[in-house]
Each structure stands twice: as structure tokens, then as C-alpha cells.
Length: 476
Ligand code: FAD
Image (cartoon, rainbow, N blue to C red):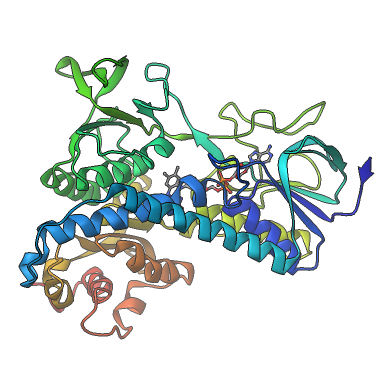
């Protein structure tokens, strides 16, 4: 039976899709959002990867594990002595699960308040204005909305030489739910997710070895930041091995271990672990998304081809989030969702891809926006640079938290800010003011002449701006 009454049908209720759906509904468009997500108990959930097995659960465990380590190792410095500190892993996991439950229900509430129809099941694009919806309870329905937004997200890439078995070799989802702390944990992939998960389990007591195939650590970050981070993570006990290419793995059920074979410049090596997490990237979840002779261009990586406004090669069909080009980040997907909804409603909204911030939530955190120093060098753009270390910040000293620095890059001729890089326990928050500055086209002088509250970590941004201008006040 054909049903035509939706203005917009969104496929996928992750941060890209659910935000698109809410914004469409706010703009008066009759909107349905299809999602197939079910948790281990079979319960349907909104929020996609981000809320269920991504941003939120990982940050919950990062926070809990940081508190555990901080209480055990660092409170003494403040003259606070505690007795034995015990880990209740089940309690920690239960808090994480409660949090996910509350937040996903929150989206359900938002759908209700905005009158977005939640369709629980599979969506498939069958034409310019045709979506087949197969509900979890076995019913099929053809929807013919005016506009379609595809937001199917992504999933972990699997390595042929380290296939997931759900117990010894797992992806990031498995590593968010171990029921005991692995004595030795191997992590394949020293990127954002590998470092975050490696940090969680190291803090909780695992001996963690990170095997990274590239010869440069965090090659997408500013060099000065990645070198500093490598030093700090090494001191914390994360054993990061670069140029390490994994060639094979072998699970030994009897011993309860997994052996990893890898090669580097020194030759071949073997390491035995209790658990192995594979974090080597994510791939758009576009398999089976389209059926029939639909001319939707999807590249060899599985990404849906879109223009700057997230329009696909089909009229009235848009795609957003991890399933399209650009960084796989929740906030990037959400802003694309807003842009598409507003464009459908006739507005001229655009998105500035140059000022999307990135964060690695390790300790210290690493956050950046705009260009790195090496990018500016490679492009031959003249620049000035200003660095302010937190060791020179009164607030950081009061917090006993002096690791890291703020680094700003500005155009040498115009002084316009081109990039900001922060390594600090609070980098994820500090980067926001730099994002605003870049978005508003500020110069380092603008930041240098702005009054910052004292004593705050933000003063480091102010001082880095002064350093860019050549006259910092609090470094010699
Ligand atoms: P998703 O969140 O993947 O949602 C897609 C939804 O579409 C899913 O619910 C899926 O069930 C549904 N779906 C797919 N196909 C169909 C179909 N055919 N029919 C019906 N439903 C369908 N990003 C950050 O910005 N910050 C972080 O701190 C961060 N941490 C992360 C930590 C981990 C461990 C992981 C794995 C990811 C993390 N990310 C983080 C990335 C972030 O989760 C993704 O960028 C974000 O979830 C992408 O949003 P999305 O809406 O495009 O897709």
C-alpha cells in the first residue's frame, strides 16, 4: 500500500539522522525517521553509534577510569589521603548502560515533542521518492515522501588477519563491555578510538600494547602536538609501537589468549594478549541501503557521493553523517543534518567544513581546529606561531595539571587565525573558543586584545595569541 503523507523520510537515527529529523519537524515538515537499531535485549533504541556504542559510552568509561586512576595515584599530591581504592567494574559498566538508556530515551522524548514519527525497522531507498520500510514486526510499507535523507552511519572495519570472534578479538563495541579487566590488552590501530579505549583499560589495570602500522604517531595532528602526546602516553605506560604491521592472529581457547604476529623494521614479532581490540577505522554502512535501478553514486569506500550541501546524485535525496565524505564525527553529522533540513525548508544554509573541531579524549586531551603547521608549510602559506605551555599558567599549577600547551597559527601577513591546537586535560572545552575565533575570521590580535578571566586555563589561549604577535606576558 503506498503512503504519501510524509514530507521527509530520514533513514538512520544517529546524530546526523535524528537531528535532521527534529530540525525538519521544527520547520513544519511532516517527518518520519526509520532506524533498525536494537540493543542486546532486542529493545529498539535511537541515537545510533554515538549514543549506543560510540561517543557517550566511551566518554562514560573514560571519565570513570580517570576518576579511579586519579583517586589512586594523584589525590595524595593535594593532601587528600584515601584508603584502599577498589574497582567495581560491573558497577562502572552499569552506570554507563544507565546513561545510554537515559540519553536514548531522551531522544525518544524529543521525537515525541517535535512530532517526528519513529519507524522501527529497516529502510531501503528504491527510487527518487520511494523508500521501502520493513518493520521489526515483519510488515512492509512503501513510503513516497517529497524528500529523503540518508543517514545510515558507519561500522568498524574488520581486518582479514584479525577477524572478530566477539570474545578474544573484538571491535570498539566489544571493548566497551569487557566483563573483566584484561591482564594484557592488544590494540591494533593507534588512532582516536584505539587511544581512547587503550587509555580506559590501562587506567583500570591492563598492560596495553598499541600496534600502529604508520611510522608517524597521530599523523593527522600537528607534529608538535603528536610528539608531545607520544612522550606523555609512553610515560603513562601505554606501549605504542609504530610501523607495526599485523600479519596474523591466533586464538588459543584453552589458554584464553590471542597471539598477534606483526612486522616492523626490526623484523617479525609475536605478542600474546588476553584480549585484542581492532580499531583500524570505520566504513559507511551503505550495503543493502539501495535496491533496484537507483542512480545513487556510492564510491568504492561505500561513501555516498554528495555535494557541499549534502545533495546526492538523485534529486530530492540527501545524505549526511559518517556515510558521506569528511571526518566521521557526531557534530559534523548533526550540523549536516541541520543544513539539509533547512535547505529542504527553503533556507540557504551552508556549513563551514574548515572549522570543524576534532578531539581525542585521552588524558591529556588533544583538540584542534583548522590547519596544522605542516599543512601551512606544505602549502607555502606564510605564518606566525605562538605557543603557551600550561606549566606557565597559574590555574594549571593550582590544579596540579600543567601538562601540554596551546599553539596558535596565524597568517604572517594578515594575522588571521588559521589553526589552533591544544593538548591539555581540558582541551575539549578550550578548543571551543578557538573554533569561534576561526569561524568569525578573528586575528590573533583580536584574541590578544580580548579580556580573559584570571585564573583560568583559557588564559593560555590569550597568551598563545600574544606569543603569535611576538609579545607574550608570562613566558620569558
Ligand atoms: P550512526 O551514529 O552510525 O547512526 C546510523 C544509524 O542508522 C544507526 O542507528 C543504524 O542502526 C541506522 N541504520 C543504518 N542503515 C539503516 C537502514 N538501512 N535502515 C534503518 N536504519 C539504518 N564522534 C565524535 O564526534 N566524538 C566522539 O567522542 C566520538 N567517539 C566515538 C567513540 C567510538 C567508540 C566510536 C565507534 C565512534 C565515536 N565517534 C565519535 C564517531 C561517532 O559515533 C559517529 O561519527 C556518529 O555516530 C555518526 O553519526 P551518524 O548519524 O552518521 O551514524
